[in-house]
Structures are given as structure tokens and as C-alpha cells.
Image (spheres, rainbow, N blue to C red):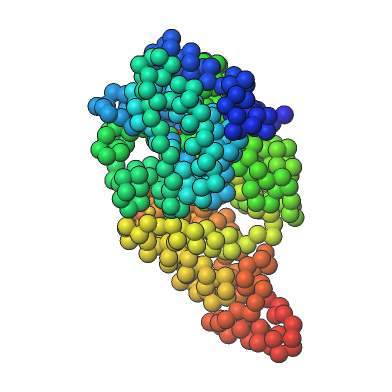
Length: 458
Ligand SMILES: Cc1cc2nc3c(=O)[nH]c(=O)nc-3n(C[C@H](O)[C@H](O)[C@H](O)COP(=O)(O)O)c2cc1C
Ligand code: SF4
């Protein structure tokens, strides 16, 4: 069995609106044990022992982050990042929707560990339908004296508020998120200082991802040593993988970190849905690296999903989404939809990202519609490099990663578009006549075909 469910164990087995169901399944017991009998410092040590790393995409060691904040001045803030705007990633939503108390229990444990009395749950604007469920869960926890003043008679107090984002992808970036909560424009801040030093309203703040926090009750219950033996030695635990694209059973599954890509797709996702072979796989979201020709499907068997192994292949685990593209997918068409997303979501603060993402989109638009020039392909190389090197925040720095991967693996196919030909036959060029062609040959073929009432042979 490729899957292992630590975080999703209760999915579909409890009523997410029922506090009693969560309690009956063992929920909040670990929190009670720690808050009434142990110390925050010991919990941070337990987290460090577990080797847990943040699941929001940056993979920063969680115990270390909490320790850094605890050592800072107070008051301190604790933020749960539930902004989840990465295209193709929907894992946090599953936790919030199916097991909201597990995220709250993690949030309370983290806040207690850093000595924070104010918590914020920052929810993605598009997940507004989950707000009533989360508000309900917060009220239930308050009634059970697990939130509010003097939690469980320990003297420790924590008040958590729900904030709804307004739909900007960049507000998932932790410092833009903090600006958004402060009522400022959702623009990333320069770092240092890091949020653990100067965060919300200038006070030390820990921002953790939903999935990261959901791991805390598991570690609190079973211990760091136990956790450390699950998954990959350098990166312990399980991961929620969002399986999307050309697979038979898209969805969210939980598997140990280090699982093989082949197993995940063949067993958990039911295999590839479109024509074999797999052309490429993009891992870690829209900003993720591409495993393509020369690696798949030839080396398919050897690819394991852990940060170290993927780094060696020029990719990363990111948010854990796995986008499978079958042999009919056109790299220009897919790159174009990624570019459209980034051009829309750039916050506009810095020129390389604001202008670069727009110019990349325009070049890909021209290539996909048959009016591309050699200079467009050359510009894609230059623009992606400049964006990566000169953008102010991780959005602009990582947005071109997928496109660069496609350029590396499928340059021939991308350049074929200069001759008015889409080898995959799946981008707009394959559907409608080219508008202009510098040699005139392609346009002439399309005109002739239009006169005949058929499609041009390209
Ligand atoms: C453009 C951008 C968007 C991001 N979106 C999210 C998000 O939706 N959720 C999230 O947890 N982290 C997101 N992050 C990462 C956060 O900045 C931060 O690293 C994370 O919330 C820290 O939590 P962790 O240590 O538990 O992973 C994003 C980063 C960038 C650059
Ligand atoms: S890189 Fe993009 S998102 Fe980041 S600050 Fe610059 S314009 Fe804004």
C-alpha cells in the first residue's frame, strides 16, 4: 500500500462539525496532556527531534522556527496560513473541510509553545464557504475551555480570529499575508527581519502552513522519535500529495515522504488517463520544476518524492502537487496558462516580475497563435533568467521555474511553433489558422486550406 494516513486518518470517518466525534477519535488528548503536564520548551525539543519541516513549500524546520520566536520579545503572534492559492494544490482544503479540529489543535499547541496569546487563521478568499465551519470549530473549542482565557485551568490564554483573504495568490507569501492582516497592500516585505523577529504589527510572529500544524497533534501524541522513522531520513513524516492532470483518479492522498513517483501515480492515482507515455510531470505547483524527456518514463522507476532527490533532478517537492501531462500536451500551451496566472498574480511592486511576467505571456501567446518569431524564444530565455535573478520576492524568483524546465526539455517542440507547427496538436495553433508567418509559407497553407474549406497541413 503506497499510502499511509496520519493526517487523513479521520477523513470521511467523522462529522467535521462534531466536536464529540473529534474527541471520540482521540482528538485534543495530546494537547491536554502537554498543556497540563509538560512545558513549551519540551514540546519544541520534541518537534526538533521529529525533524518536521514546514509543508507550505519552503520546508523550513518547524521546531527551529518556534524556538526562534520563543526566544524573541513578546507579545508574539501565531498565524495559520490557510491561503492555499497554488494552482493544482488543494491539500489544506481537505484538512480544513474534513478535519478542522486537527488544524486547530496544532495551532493551539504551536501558539502555546511560542508563548503567543493571539492566533490568526488566515483563510483563502476562495475558501469563504469554509468560514462558517471554522468559526463553528473555534466556538466549540472555546466552550470546551481549549481556547480563550485560562485554558484547561493552566493560566495560559489564547484567542484566535479568522481572517478572510481577498483572493490574491501573493498573500500566501508570509510577509504579504501579514501586510494583508494589517490592512496594507498585499506586497511581500524585504527580509531580514524575518517574521519571527518582526512580524505582525512589528512583533515576533510564527507563520505555519495548515498541513504543518496538523502534524503537531500527531507528534504530541506519539513523540518525535516515532515520527522521525516515518518517511525519508532527511525529511521525516508523510505528505499530502495533490494528484492532478492526466490521471485516472485525481485528488489528495497521503503517503510517506520518499514515495516513488511511479507508485504514487500508478497505485494512488489509478494511472495515466491519456495516451502513454507520460510526457512530463511538474512537481510542487505552478512554480515547480519539470521532470521531462530523458527522465520520464525511462527513469520513472527511480524517481522518489523527497526534497533531496528532487533537488538533484532540478525540481523540488514544494507544496506536493503532482501535475501529470500525457503525450498530447503542448508545452507552449501549458506554459502559456502558467504565464497567464503569474502575469495576473504579480503584485506589481518590482519591474522584473511585473514586466517580465507580462512579456513572457505575450511571447507565448504569439508562439501559440502562429505569429511567434525567433526573438520570442530567445526572449523567453533572457526574461526567465532576469526574473529569477532580480525579482524582489519568491513569487517572481520561482514563477519562471516551470517554463525554464519546459524550455530545457521541449525546446525542439517549442521552436516548431515558429514554423506554424504544433507537434502535439493541442495548442490554439492546431485549432485555428496562423495569423501571420514570417516566411509566408504557413499563412499561405492556411489560406489555401480555408479556401478549400478544410484544415491546413502543418
Ligand atoms: C507566492 C507565494 C505564495 C505562498 N502561498 C502559501 C500558501 O498559500 N500557504 C502556505 O502555507 N505557504 C505559502 N507560501 C509559503 C509561506 O511564505 C511560508 O513559507 C509558509 O506559510 C510557512 O509555513 P511552514 O513553515 O509551515 O511551511 C507561499 C510563498 C510564496 C512565495
Ligand atoms: S517579485 Fe512579483 S510578487 Fe514579488 S514583489 Fe516583485 S512584483 Fe511583487
